[in-house]
Image 1: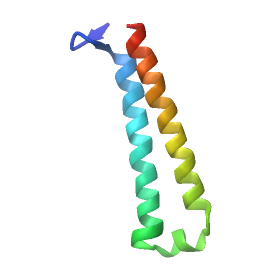
Image 2: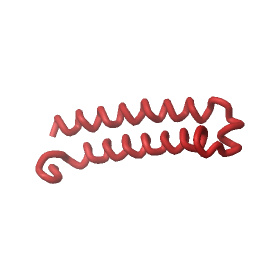
Image 3: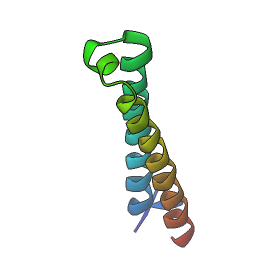
Length: 72
């Protein structure tokens, strides 16, 4: 089913997942390097590594969204 005449719901879901993952990764980096919460600082590199993995996941979800949009 095409939503808005150019993209189906599956592509919108993928873009939403990608955007959510990117926002979550930004919030992790914000907690670690700007807010400097105790848990984030004591985790050493865990917050940064997980944020980088979330960015990679977000890129993959956005790519899947483009593939789903092209298939519609």
